[in-house]
Image 1 (tube, rainbow, N blue to C red):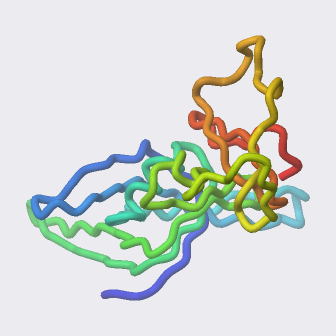
Image 2 (cartoon, helix red, strand yellow):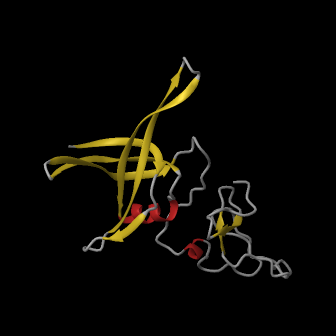
Length: 187
């Protein structure tokens, strides 16, 4: 059986990353999806049955899953459902796997900070070719003004684990490489 499915639930295991013998990156985790209903008699929400799925991502998606998804986080998974059965010792077993096309955080439960993946190293996103000539001011087309003398951070309080990128307002801001958060931005 092979059908497209969208599942909402919580990540139940740590992400397991590996590579196939052919060199394709993979990442997998288990997700638990529990139905909930409102019990009018008691006036409370009641948990229903929990369905368990193994979520499998490949190639670029596998790398993004490994960097973004953690145990306990609410996620939405879209992909192809594959139900497999096998028999052992006279008993039939089933496995439910979703070959993921897309995985993301469920924003019903919190916020996320999206950062587009790139084949370029993160610092190359702000490097300019050719460099601006002295005194040149550039427009907000992705280029920026060179800092003036005396604008440097002389107290050494800068974060060594940061890069600089352009935010949605066109401003150059620091990016914490450990958390993925933008510094000094209204985003």
